Amino acid sequence: MSNGRQQVPLRRAQLADVTPDGDRPMELPKTITLYVNGNKYFFGKPMVVSRRAPWEEFLRQATEKTGLMFAARDILTPTHGTKINGFDELVHGSSYVVISKGNFKPIG
Image (cartoon, rainbow, N blue to C red):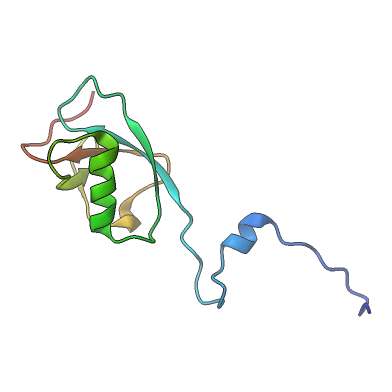
């Protein structure tokens, strides 16, 4: 039975913006590109980032994705070497440098 109102279907993006309990907007996955510190021949690996896992798990996955011999210690911005401390600081579509040891070397 209709109450005279026409229901407008929600777009998929609108459905994904709210948690099932309606609390706060859900964090959509971000795609970033990872580079290895000091390796000018490493062309970058794309990685999809989601907040479902803790930051330490993200660092472990970054280590595997980039093929580092030692565990990733930090994620840095590619030009200034600013340390990224959490998921909120990652920007969708941006590039980052994975560092396991040594000093930061800017890309480009």
